[in-house]
Image (cartoon, rainbow, N blue to C red):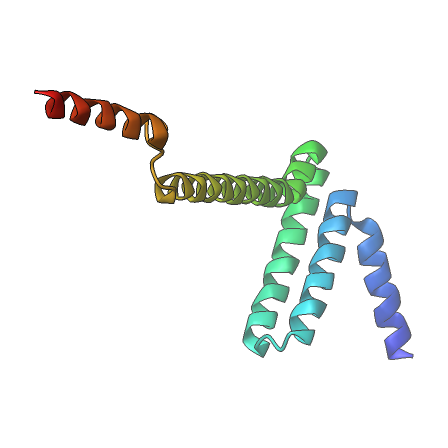
Length: 137
């Protein structure tokens, strides 16, 4: 019987929260379960739960004061920042790959032997004609 009353009281408390607080609470509980399955220490999980409770209270308080949009912004902002960081990192990786590709192409160009300015036959003919002139004197 005590379990039913505590569950219904949790349900009542959850029902009184504004939508940004509910979304934050659900996402945070999911992250706590992930932390538990990844063998995160007990103290770290306890601190996270404490932080989740305080932050949920603050978000709900902001909503009750009439600043629902600010509450939404505080919930969404970390995910926006994370998305921007991922995009910036992907761009950095792409630029590094492009630079590496350009460096490899430059190295290939440097490794290739220099082509003579004139074909070899023309050079031989030129030198041969010069020698003939010297021999004629």
